[in-house]
Each structure stands twice: as structure tokens, then as C-alpha cells.
Length: 181
Ligand code: ZN
Image (cartoon, rainbow, N blue to C red; front, side, top):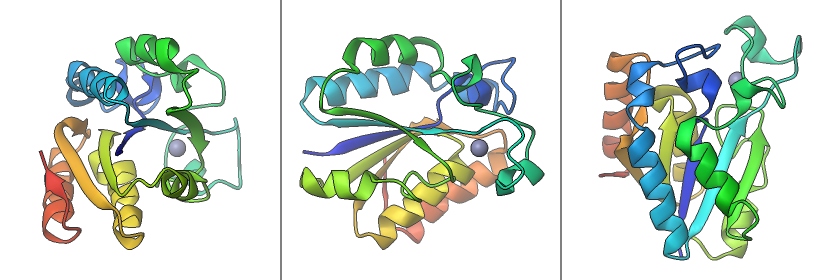
């Protein structure tokens, strides 16, 4: 069994009117991410949605000083983008589907993701979503430190910053030993 970690593919990060949108490069990933998610689900693998979660006017959160408000709890901005939401609605009740809220860039920081992967005996994790150079990168570094085999899907990750996107892809491959497919 392996796991697909869907990271932050939400309206605020992807849609034209999203609060912190990566815009077209993120929107271009939709068909690939949806198909890959469906493939993982159909093959009996573990499908994870690790989704950024903020309270309005949270002065303690470090991102409050860095970014405009985004992914506010239970808003349209926090909802999964486009047809990924439709797919999620269809599969969400399965025990092999796990949606949770994260408080930091990394899907591992402060979450129970690592123990869930361990209890399912999963060693190989695949990453898709946004942004390549922020939440995907931080998740990849934690996965590396925890000893997971890492696969990053080039057609399933994107960023508003092409230069940082390219750097992150190199870093996954050259420094974290990830397979880029
Ligand atoms: Zn955030």
C-alpha cells in the first residue's frame, strides 16, 4: 500500500478569486490531480487531503504576518478546488480516505499523519498540490527526515513562483532522493 498526499488544492490557493492564489499554474493541475487521486483510490491505496486551516484574525499564527488571510475555517476559500471537491464528496466516507486540517506548511507538522501511515504499513508517499516551494517542500523535507520513500508528481505540483518551483523540484530530486515523475 502507498499513500497520495493532496496538499492545499483549495479555492483560496487555486481559483482566480482565491485569497492567496497561484492562479493558472495551479489551475492547470486539476485534471492530473483528480485522475491520480481516483487511480490511488481505485487501486486500494490511501488517499490523504492535508488542508491548511486558519481562524480569522489569528494573531498568534506566524503566517498572519506573511500572507493575507486565507483558508479560513469552513469557508468557500478552504473548500477543495473544482472537480477534486466532487471526487472527495464521492469517496470521503471510505476508511482509506483521510481529510484533516494542518496548521503549518508541512502536512506532518503537529498532525497524526505519520502514525496513520505507520499503522497502515505505508513506506511510499506521493505528493501533489500547491505550492511546490512552500507546503510541498516542507512536507517533502519532513517525509525525508522520517524515512519515507518519496515520489513527487511534476504535473501535479505548481506555484505562483516559477523560479522557486524549479528550485524545489531540483531539491526533491538531488537532496531528498525523491523520484520525480
Ligand atoms: Zn496558511
